Image (cartoon, rainbow, N blue to C red):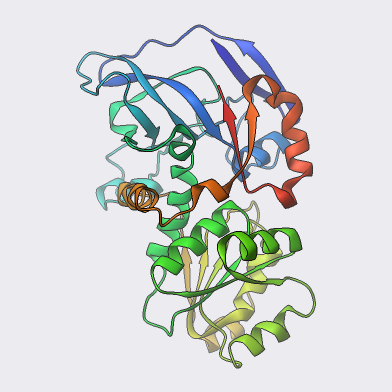
Length: 335
């Protein structure tokens, strides 16, 4: 079967592998679509903190069930997405109902080989029914679920002002679900093109993150700051700076992850009595919310899907997509 392998940073090649066979409780999925994510770009560039090479990337997946292992009961031919966060089921986080933060988690495409291949075996419990959705939409469920989960973590006890820092896919996903939850959402990003897309295609106000940003945001909130600031940049300097925009009594919610140590000025944190919240991966309820929102038309997936790539072209096309990042929201690979 065709497989796209990241051998080492900046080394992406197409190889042939034996087709996998599903074991007990597993299903064989034919992968038709793979969404490209910031995680994949970081893996390609050698900047992911939890990864060992070589690795088959791909965790935003849409496909169909083509074979069942013993005990599996899904319908053959069913259009599906995949929950790529394979949890152990018995650690302290799993016992608390937080498999997204499993101590022993294995994320497809990060800790184990993912779906950048024609066929993939996964546990039946990881399969998500995507009936009624297109394959492209199925491949977009996971990144949208990251945003939906982040918003579920946000306190709802303020005046409803939210700043999302970082207008990439996760920031946009967070903004979309925050707006559905009634937040007054604005975006900030260093890239004017991203903000223009968010304004013209999705109706969000945005501010360029330059030296004038503090004054502009201060004017926007009449000096109060934002009840919730969501940082989706994956940049330690941006995370540190985001605290400056949090209202007294507000919360800073970190969705992006970056290697290294994050520190704040303690007086700034304390005088706000701020709440610091991490958001990692997503839960089954978040996937369900995303699917319902797509089916209802509340999430404009056709506008979010900006680029399509054939799998055969990916080794040469991926560097160009990274170069064009200002104009790429969601690229989807077709097998």
